[in-house]
Image (tube, rainbow, N blue to C red; front, side):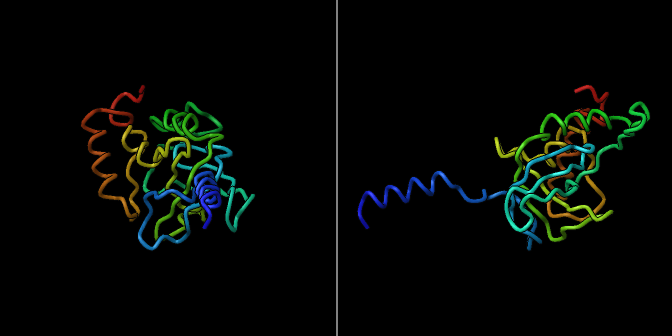
Length: 171
């Protein structure tokens, strides 16, 4: 292959990276996919628009797998559960309008028919689900998922440090 063609091919591949190698469950029910967060509904739920794949252009309500944040009362925000508004605001500040990589676990659908996802902000690959547990804005959900041991350890660390739900929920 001529050197100029080899160099052009290398530059093309560098400019068009494939999906990153991100954590996902064993036997993931779907491939890693790119999406944009259209609206954050609460600390563990968002509407996303798929930017590639079979669902290109579709908007879907997703549930961030492995975490459970306090409920937000959208009709009466003061009636929200303790730390619910703080968790919601954290999710908005991290994700709303952002592109995210979505990875999946063995099961793609959870309660209420929402798609279960692990979310990674494309700008820095921040693992949103893990972040919410580490910062104390989410508890580990009671459902089985691939990273339950790791998330439980991070939840215990947040408890010991008094972060989020385990403190005064101001940070």
